[in-house]
Figure 1: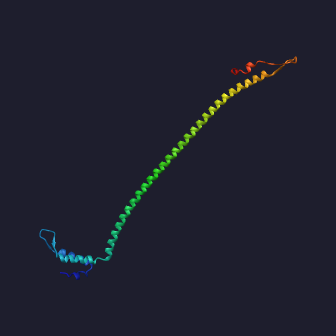
Figure 2: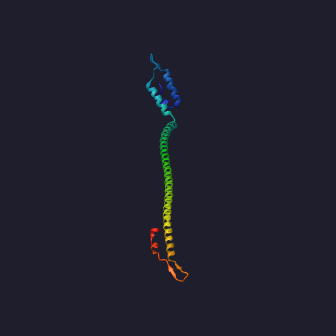
Figure 3: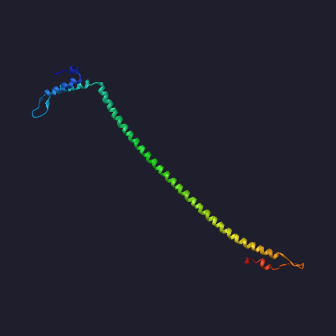
Length: 178
């Protein structure tokens, strides 16, 4: 048949065509689609075809393998980034919600404090007004007592020339009648 050294000088396409010829020309097995071919010759042709493949094809296969590994790693990295971004977004939303709730609580607390301060101020003003009104009544009574006391102390001049002083001290010092 064919010498392996002679086969190596063929280009790959010619070798593959020769393999096809051998399969087509091989003896058919009875009641089967299988054919008998010379194993050594077929292996030599296939080996020559493999050796005849251009280096660029091997490099292309290597590049494809590298590309697949790179894409796989890039997908993993992208998934990690997406998960981290989702976690960050969730945390930011949660923090924003916490800030919103804190602001609402602060507004409510301030509003409650202002309302309490207004209420306390009104209560204090009412209390002071009551005390001042009570004090005013006491002052009015005291003023009346002072006025009555002064009236009693006044000297009544008699047209005859003798001065007379009223002598009713019992009513002046009686505070129950105020």
